[in-house]
Amino acid sequence: MVVRNKARLVAQGFCRKEGIDYEETFAPVARLEAIRILLAFAASKGFKLQQMDVKSAFLNGFIEEEMSREFEMSLMGKLQFFLRLQIKQDSEGTFIHQAKYTRDRLKKFEMGDSKPMTTPMSTNTVLDADEDGEAVDQKEFRGMIGSLLYLTATRPDIQFAVYLCARYQASSRTSHRQAVKHIFRLQVEGVDNALNKGEIES
Image 1 (cartoon, one colour):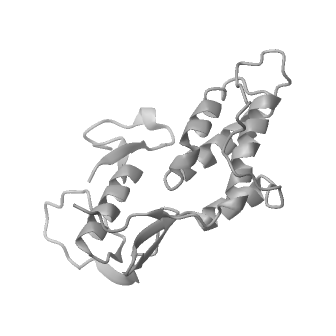
Image 2 (image 1 turned 90 degrees about the vertical axis):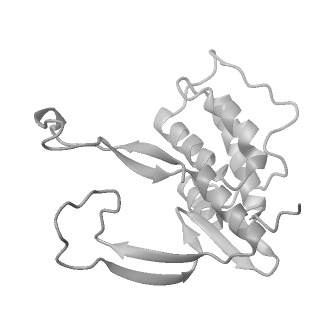
C-alpha cells in the first residue's frame, strides 16, 4: 500500500543518536489515494471489507528475539469508519462520505446555519492577491483550508475552488475568506453526498 511519511515530533531530539536511540524519524501512514484504490478494487470484485484492531503492536518493527506473548487482536466487523471516512457497503456498491466530519467542521467555524450554496464558487469570482484588502486571522484561514483539503477525499467537485483559495494562505484577505466560506456553504447542502466506489464495468 502507498504510504506517506509522517514526521515525528521529539522533545530534545538533538540529544538522540541515529542507530542507538532511533532508526527512522517518520511514521508510515496510508495515503487517502491508496485507501480509495483499495475500496474501488474491493467493490469491483464484490468483496466486503472487514476491520480489525491490533492492540499495542509495533507492526513495522523487526523482532529479533522470541516473543513472550501474542498480540491482542479484535474483529470490529464490517468496515464503516476509517480515518474520518464513513464507508457504507451494500448490494449497490461501496460509498464513502464524510458527513460527520463535515458537520463538525461547520460547527467549529460557526457555519452550520448558513444559507446553502449549489456551486463551490461563484461564476463571477476572480481571486487575486488583493493586497489592498483587509487581512484576516491566518491561523483560522489555514484551519479552514486544511479542513476543506481533507474533504476533497470524498468531494472532488470542490477541489479546484479549494486549491485556488489555498494559494493565498500566506497573505489571506477578506475576499479569500469569503471564497472559503462559500465552499463551506456548499457543504451545508451536500453534507450527506457520497462518492460511489461501486462495481467497475469492464
